[in-house]
Length: 268
Image 1 (tube, helix red, strand yellow):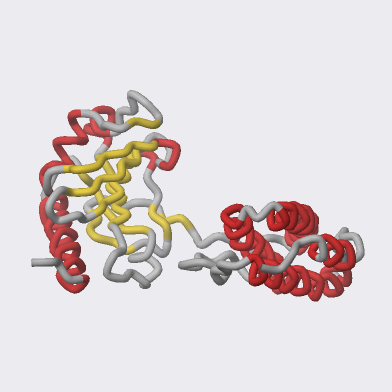
Image 2 (cartoon, rainbow, N blue to C red; image 1 turned 90 degrees about the horizontal axis):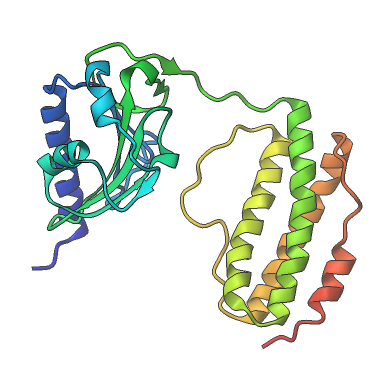
């Protein structure tokens, strides 16, 4: 029988309860919390578990050992830990994504198809984000305060650079539109949409916030992509007066040049 999304969600919640129950009674671990969608309170049926596990210092040298930075396998000690909760069907370890002194291992379990990012952190280096979803805490872990909004000067500098990069990549994207490389154009419509949103945020002085999903709408035709490029350019152009008023170092709008390049692209 095919598993439903409801069943998949329930299986994941059961796994989380099992992990919390077993590891909270394991002397090797001082605390655990979830980051990602659970910490943002927007988890859906297919959200994985971004499990941050604080390893007591007397066990951290063994459990947080890093033979390699990136690997298709993990250490025996970590594999034994992960295997308490099922048979791993996929393992990928990328310790570039780990906190200082820690490890980061993606695991997908056989049969249940559930996914866990196991993030192991030595207790001596552990800090808990203020928005984390706490599972258990047997020893007090320092809390990281919320990230402060950039200063006015930092916002202006960052926004000015993003505007210049946006115009450069908008022009380059048009080249690939002309070459009928729709995959490249689709990828960069998404990136360019994100740049416009970042400049809007910087001008407004709002803190960065995670946004789930895509920022752009899929445009399957050359005509639709051409129109999307033009809309993005006009949207960025509308932000320039306010950024200049704030002291931003930006050149006048190049929309005439952008439109001239777009005229070289034939509509489908």
